[in-house]
Length: 317
Image 1 (cartoon, rainbow, N blue to C red):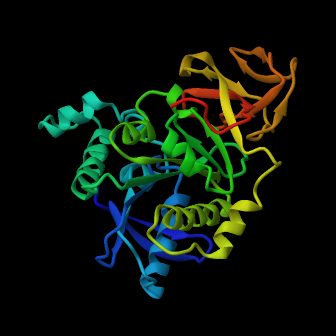
Image 2: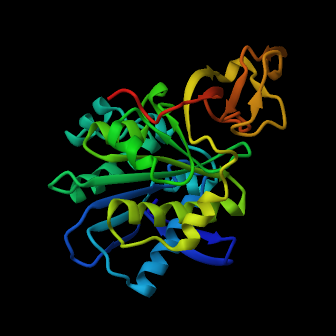
């Protein structure tokens, strides 16, 4: 599949979606910013927000340094409105699988085909002086304020700290085959941006705002629109900025996992709270902490996580 059609619900304007949604440069020296969207097909807000940024850049044509490329990840799943077709595209960024396809092995799943195309684009655009950045745009199945999920990597955590949203440090490092860890291990700086719940209109605005802020922070544009900074600032739920993951509850389809309705991301929980059920057996909280990423969709292998406030952004390299 080479093209799908989406409609931005904020503007009611349909638009064509291709692998490269847009690429912007004025020929000036500068960094490469890769904006990944639609890695999960049931998360279209990143695609919609990116399309808005591209239209604005083309219309206003501000002084621009380096190159931004906007990539749509899982076109087939996006067309079907599902998280993935054969396997989760954000769990297969494994060096051995990518290297095998670089050497000519044919993709063995729908998502491997998509991944091969994404890697080709990134390989062709990589900055020769290692000024390479990325922003991977996602949303959540539960209610959530926007936040950043950033691997344990000092430059990436420092970059995340320049965004006016919460940062959860190291959550992706507890998963296998995710895009942010792979890209960081291969010379990029960046992180995953989670804009809010899948179906919220506010998630589109947050995606667009995060892309504008990223363009400014990496050095592609002189300043981000004030409304972009304000959009993100107003979403913070308290004064605490950094969090670290303490526990992830893994699930499989045969466990019959069901999250208790009503939980939202970053919600405070206490020891003894009922969190979920497995095979109709209750899962009771052992923690006085915050709940993170409660699962309210049929696909996914992380039922919920537990996070705690971190007093400093990173104390390790």
